[in-house]
Length: 225
Image (cartoon, rainbow, N blue to C red; front, side, top):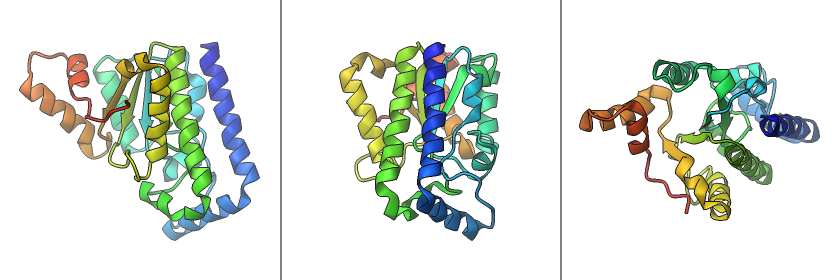
């Protein structure tokens, strides 16, 4: 796990650097937060739960840090996070979520609503760099372990979409190491029950399947070629 710890520390340092070196960026994110009526703690957000990883089995990727996450500096701490944790626990996928699941996002930039990221047009380069960084981080973790990479929320993945650079970076890394593709899966968000609806529809059609078998069949049709 030394490699994972090094990656996590590098991530922490990178986020700290982004926050300290870009005061105009902080102000822009702060203006968006003010419109929702809450104070901004962090414009770029590190996930402190990554420091707890000891036996990585899954890399779980959401969109971007929300209001509570930027304040607590932990990812997936809201309702969707509770749903995700319960799913992993109830289906016996992990014994300790924080020690075995690395929760990342497609960008470490905070906004209350993911679509509010589009308001940061003046910081396009910084935003795209954050996508590349987080995609590379996920793949670096994947290469360093036997973990699976689960990318949830796929409506903004694709050419000319919000997270286009994330998918482009993922494809580039898979071209360099095609074997990784067998351990990358795309699913709906855990929010609003979308993840479970997708999985349950597979199980309903294939009642003989185990949950782990159904998870592979529930993989969304998104190519990393």
